[in-house]
Length: 247
Length: 247
Image 1 (cartoon, rainbow over the protein chains, first blue to last red):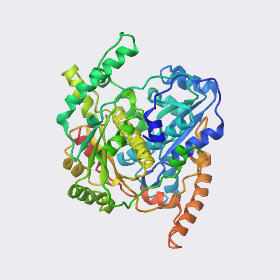
Image 2 (cartoon, one colour):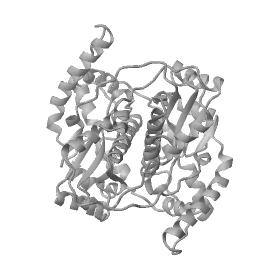
Image 3 (cartoon, chains in turn yellow, green):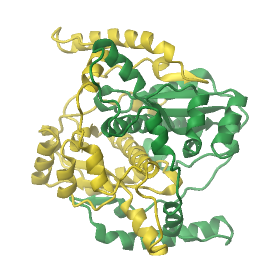
Image 4 (cartoon, one colour):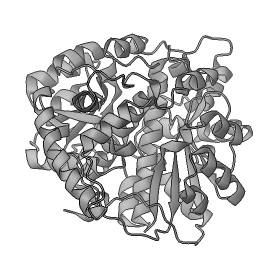
């Protein structure tokens, strides 16, 4: 295992940060590394809003379900899928011509571009000794987040990311076994059950150890809870209100 | 700049590969590094189909717009957003209970999970001296790809990825300047125009040099072309047919 793979394999989400600021140039270096990721047809359909202001982080923390680490981290990044920049470009060269920023395909492109850049940035941050955690919670009250950050139409916050010096050392969380996610030549649905059963044992044991015997819910049961919860049902309407028709 | 950031910054897409096979264990190592990326609530909502069979790669190459490198690379990975595994888990624990795999929120989660894992895998592959290129073209005839790979409902191919030993050394493609994508405290739409103009000059010059003066279309014009093309308008209907209602 080389150093880079060893870095990737040692990732854990950090939710407690030292009270130590991050220089702007370090943030810029991290974003620049993010930009180096692949981008569909070089569309680079994403933007990042970096928040350092304590009050603003406090509001975002509240909007995201009172996660204290959003307020406590020195820099909170909001990763946005951005078709606004492309739409401006299109209007400049082809004013009045029909364009397709509102179709599902371009929504996928922008969302994927954002995620690839964010993950590169996460790796860069960790290589610098920083810790990160992705925050899906900013989609809880996404309209208010978009308002607060003054996002124009065709820009939506995909997720947040806390950035800072780690003040904790959590254990590694076990993942599904490789054969559960990797198929050869075609998808083999038959093996799913067996793989999930195996992973359920692993995760139960992990939870039991981590909680001193208090919890041992297997992964598949947690997933069942998750999937039977009506999660963020406002997303479709919010996206539509921002110009993503998903046609 | 540390070694990892230097690796990230030296990324370029590779479209010509040596005729040298890749061991299965190397592919597994790369996928395992992908799995180490963050995942929303540990849902791990993705799967990968790895294709080594020459005939099958040939068919995929054709389906993706006759990109020769899909046939020529030793391993072609199809990265799929996968809610099928979670739905199976839910049905096991909560049979008959309403679940929400068909809402937009879970579509975003699965798409982002897939992209984060893929980007980690891309970084791992490059750290091992391999080259990669993302293939959005597999969405051209996505229904046929899904059929070929025997994907069950609630699994969709987000993108492909060629993997192999590079047999070319393309130059680095310049990206938007950092201030074009990075905003502080709130989104500053006013700066977009100026930043894009600056980048247009950079990209024109880059193209002119790269093509010996044959081409110099600025980025914003390429983007205008892109956005006014009716791109993959079948995506919405395809997703619906596979259980992603995007409600």
